[in-house]
Image (cartoon, rainbow, N blue to C red; front, side, top):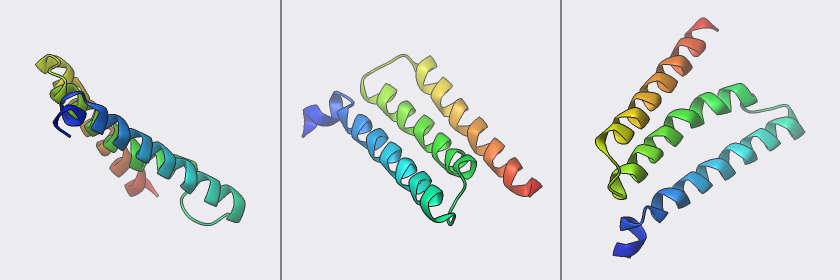
Length: 88
């Protein structure tokens, strides 16, 4: 289990789950017309994806710049999502 975390594979698994969740939500919206629109799904998923990329970078010992960049991207994606939601 230690190797699973140290290699960053746990983050890869989380990214896969996020992708599958977003795809399922988009498919449900497409088939039923209910639920979140694809843009809203993207707004929800992108900050999480960036946070998991920051986690992966930290787990594999990437330089602090990569971790900081991913965290900054997560913050920017979150702010964009909030701003778009408040405009509606």
